[in-house]
Length: 501
Image 1 (tube, rainbow, N blue to C red):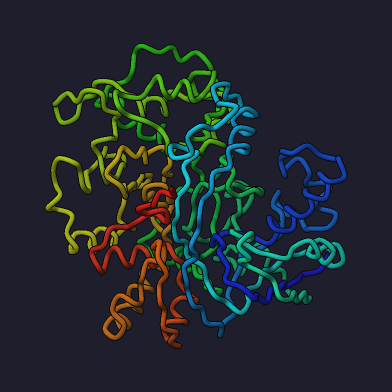
Image 2: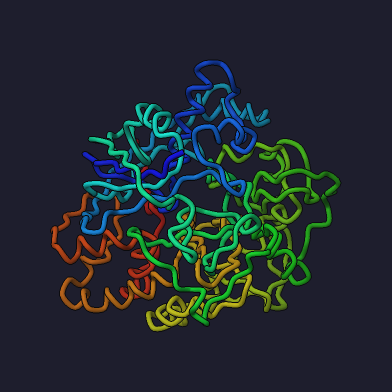
């Protein structure tokens, strides 16, 4: 096994999640080969193959080697926006719905303008970077062989994005694939298997695919796109709960508020399983066609079109998620609200051990949502009591943002749900960005923090100082800065979708 640094020189803009790791990229290529050879089924658990994987990638403390990506020290970045035309893929939708137990999916799509079959246009941010790099420890020859199958990185490769011009694989003296130093993880590390001096902790998957709902408490890398030493452990204002067992947001909310917001008593919760909505295991709930279960729980005139079809899979929904979208009479502030789910009247809210607080509601407190209040609230996220949930709506319809959100077990690394988009805010990096942006805004105004999720082209003037700013701070940090400084609503990347006729 060798300690390696893998550099990808890019020829196209890239769309890549901050916490994407090189092991997930290599294992995607590895499992694709096994499927072509007929050795594995379509869906497998990575942890079941640790013995085989350990033959060519180092495995330590039940963790597969492979860091997140970094931008080289002197590299600049230019953001741009890619125009996406989301086309309907009825055959794929039907295939997965049936695979996961939906017997109500039609064999033919008559209307492509509604629900999961709807087509629309939206903009998505991509970064123009000359190169990025990763760290990994493993068998250099096998890794080079697997990299021969990797020609693109990130999302939207069908658009040509993330095209790799060349690959440089070089040995390095130290293993930086798990830890950059004793305070800074280079990848998500399970708190059960590692002991890292950082308060950047959140519920995350321990194994690829990292979008899996099978989550545990993990120490997380810095959100800085460049290598950055974490200082949260020595900073007395931060705290975390590394020993926490997984808490789903709906279970957390149910424990806090079910005595205030009425629970449905006309359904029998006799089954157990893994919830298709929140990923919680062994909770009481209902088995069956999940689409049918959801429709039974919804209030009059409500719908659930924003529920991702592929998550209908397990054929089980827990009591807490049913409660969170349940259409029934609920108590709110002593008043009875008919045909409403518990959180329909909470537009923007925070939940913690003290209960819930309106940041903004449909009926009241709109005058509270001022630029000064937003700057104060988001500028002091580290003062929130653990655990807590922050969720914001970005449209006026009945978005069920609670079940899509995440419980924060750290006030240093904070998930914030904004409509369909999950933002992860590294508070240490946010504070640095606020200081740096204060000087730049005087000169560049809104150009600095433009939200590149618009559905029209954006002209961007390349400037050395701006390009350096974009090469350090990811989209989540910049979007929140935009929200704080310019009094603009935070919008999902799919904001104001335009129907394609």
